[in-house]
Image (tube, rainbow, N blue to C red; front, side, top):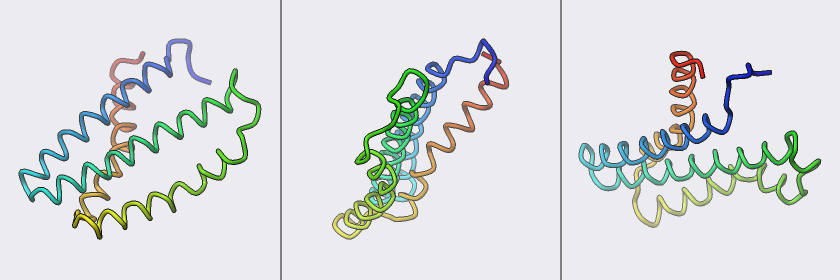
Length: 127
Protein backbone atom coordinates (compact mmCIF):
# COMPACT_ATOMS: atom_id res chain seq x y z
CA UNK A 1 0.00 0.00 0.00
CA UNK A 2 2.71 2.45 0.97
CA UNK A 3 5.97 2.91 -0.82
CA UNK A 4 9.00 0.98 0.38
CA UNK A 5 10.39 4.06 2.11
CA UNK A 6 7.40 4.75 4.41
CA UNK A 7 8.11 3.78 8.01
CA UNK A 8 4.90 3.49 10.03
CA UNK A 9 6.67 3.08 13.37
CA UNK A 10 8.73 6.23 12.83
CA UNK A 11 5.60 8.18 11.87
CA UNK A 12 3.78 7.02 15.01
CA UNK A 13 6.74 8.03 17.19
CA UNK A 14 6.80 11.48 15.55
CA UNK A 15 3.06 11.87 16.05
CA UNK A 16 3.34 10.99 19.75
CA UNK A 17 6.13 13.55 20.15
CA UNK A 18 4.06 16.18 18.34
CA UNK A 19 1.06 15.43 20.56
CA UNK A 20 3.17 15.72 23.72
CA UNK A 21 4.62 19.04 22.55
CA UNK A 22 1.17 20.36 21.64
CA UNK A 23 -0.23 19.26 25.01
CA UNK A 24 2.46 21.10 26.93
CA UNK A 25 2.43 24.20 24.74
CA UNK A 26 -1.36 24.40 24.64
CA UNK A 27 -1.90 23.91 28.35
CA UNK A 28 0.79 26.45 29.27
CA UNK A 29 -0.48 28.88 26.63
CA UNK A 30 -4.11 28.60 27.77
CA UNK A 31 -3.07 28.88 31.44
CA UNK A 32 -1.18 32.10 30.75
CA UNK A 33 -3.79 33.56 28.39
CA UNK A 34 -7.09 32.54 30.03
CA UNK A 35 -6.17 31.12 33.44
CA UNK A 36 -5.63 27.81 35.19
CA UNK A 37 -9.11 26.33 34.48
CA UNK A 38 -8.48 26.74 30.74
CA UNK A 39 -4.96 25.30 30.90
CA UNK A 40 -6.14 22.36 32.99
CA UNK A 41 -9.10 21.76 30.70
CA UNK A 42 -6.84 21.72 27.65
CA UNK A 43 -4.46 19.33 29.37
CA UNK A 44 -7.32 16.99 30.25
CA UNK A 45 -8.54 16.97 26.65
CA UNK A 46 -4.98 16.44 25.39
CA UNK A 47 -4.42 13.48 27.72
CA UNK A 48 -7.67 11.89 26.56
CA UNK A 49 -6.68 12.48 22.92
CA UNK A 50 -3.23 10.94 23.40
CA UNK A 51 -4.69 7.95 25.25
CA UNK A 52 -7.32 7.46 22.53
CA UNK A 53 -4.65 7.57 19.83
CA UNK A 54 -2.50 5.08 21.74
CA UNK A 55 -5.37 2.62 22.30
CA UNK A 56 -6.59 2.89 18.72
CA UNK A 57 -3.06 2.32 17.39
CA UNK A 58 -2.61 -0.75 19.59
CA UNK A 59 -5.99 -2.11 18.51
CA UNK A 60 -5.24 -1.65 14.81
CA UNK A 61 -1.78 -3.22 15.16
CA UNK A 62 -3.32 -6.19 16.97
CA UNK A 63 -5.64 -6.99 14.08
CA UNK A 64 -3.14 -6.20 11.34
CA UNK A 65 -0.55 -8.49 9.76
CA UNK A 66 1.39 -10.39 12.41
CA UNK A 67 -1.11 -9.50 15.12
CA UNK A 68 -3.95 -11.41 16.66
CA UNK A 69 -6.43 -12.83 14.17
CA UNK A 70 -9.40 -11.46 16.05
CA UNK A 71 -9.40 -9.09 19.06
CA UNK A 72 -11.03 -10.25 22.25
CA UNK A 73 -14.70 -9.30 22.58
CA UNK A 74 -14.18 -7.12 25.64
CA UNK A 75 -11.53 -5.11 23.79
CA UNK A 76 -13.96 -4.46 20.95
CA UNK A 77 -16.68 -3.40 23.39
CA UNK A 78 -14.27 -1.13 25.28
CA UNK A 79 -13.09 0.45 22.02
CA UNK A 80 -16.67 1.09 20.96
CA UNK A 81 -17.73 2.40 24.36
CA UNK A 82 -14.69 4.63 24.89
CA UNK A 83 -16.54 7.76 23.81
CA UNK A 84 -19.22 7.17 26.41
CA UNK A 85 -16.56 6.54 29.03
CA UNK A 86 -14.64 9.66 27.98
CA UNK A 87 -17.82 11.76 28.09
CA UNK A 88 -18.62 10.53 31.60
CA UNK A 89 -15.09 11.22 32.87
CA UNK A 90 -14.96 14.68 31.30
CA UNK A 91 -18.41 15.57 32.67
CA UNK A 92 -17.42 14.46 36.17
CA UNK A 93 -14.13 16.37 36.08
CA UNK A 94 -15.74 19.51 34.69
CA UNK A 95 -18.30 19.53 37.50
CA UNK A 96 -15.81 18.56 40.22
CA UNK A 97 -12.88 20.81 39.35
CA UNK A 98 -14.48 23.59 37.32
CA UNK A 99 -12.37 23.01 34.21
CA UNK A 100 -13.32 24.78 31.02
CA UNK A 101 -15.20 22.59 28.54
CA UNK A 102 -14.15 24.59 25.47
CA UNK A 103 -10.49 24.21 26.38
CA UNK A 104 -10.99 20.46 26.86
CA UNK A 105 -12.58 20.22 23.42
CA UNK A 106 -9.58 22.05 21.95
CA UNK A 107 -7.29 19.56 23.70
CA UNK A 108 -9.21 16.66 22.18
CA UNK A 109 -8.16 17.89 18.73
CA UNK A 110 -4.41 17.44 19.18
CA UNK A 111 -4.38 13.96 17.62
CA UNK A 112 -5.95 15.40 14.46
CA UNK A 113 -3.45 18.28 14.43
CA UNK A 114 -0.57 15.84 14.93
CA UNK A 115 -1.83 13.76 11.99
CA UNK A 116 -1.97 16.84 9.77
CA UNK A 117 1.54 17.89 10.83
CA UNK A 118 2.81 14.36 10.13
CA UNK A 119 1.25 14.51 6.66
CA UNK A 120 3.05 17.80 6.02
CA UNK A 121 6.30 16.29 7.28
CA UNK A 122 5.91 13.36 4.89
CA UNK A 123 5.15 15.69 1.98
CA UNK A 124 8.27 17.73 2.69
CA UNK A 125 10.72 14.97 3.59
CA UNK A 126 9.18 12.07 1.68
CA UNK A 127 10.47 9.40 4.03
